[in-house]
Image 1 (cartoon, helix red, strand yellow):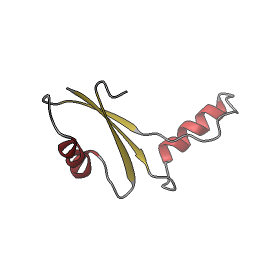
Image 2 (cartoon, rainbow, N blue to C red; image 1 turned 120 degrees about the vertical axis):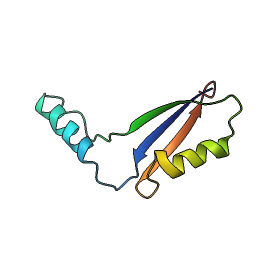
Image 3 (cartoon, helix red, strand yellow; image 1 turned 90 degrees about the horizontal axis):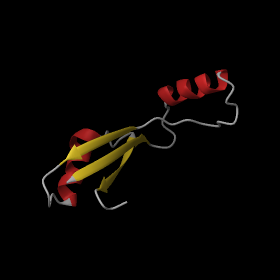
Image 4 (spheres, rainbow, N blue to C red; image 1 turned 90 degrees about the vertical axis):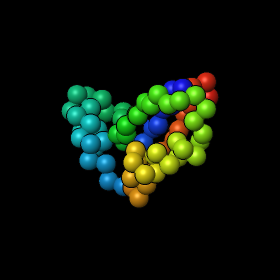
Length: 79
């Protein structure tokens, strides 16, 4: 089963990478961009039937820093 975990900084947490991308876009003439936040996408292949609690535990213990990041879990077919 394929699982996608999207990890993003919480609102209010400084995003230096997003700031750099925003600055670069402005320098290229893309003035309509108001803000950029950069996150990451983690794709996992897990055994069929892996429960949501196990996926949550993976995210909370390793894949996301829950102090400064939020995450969402999307399983195959749940789009």
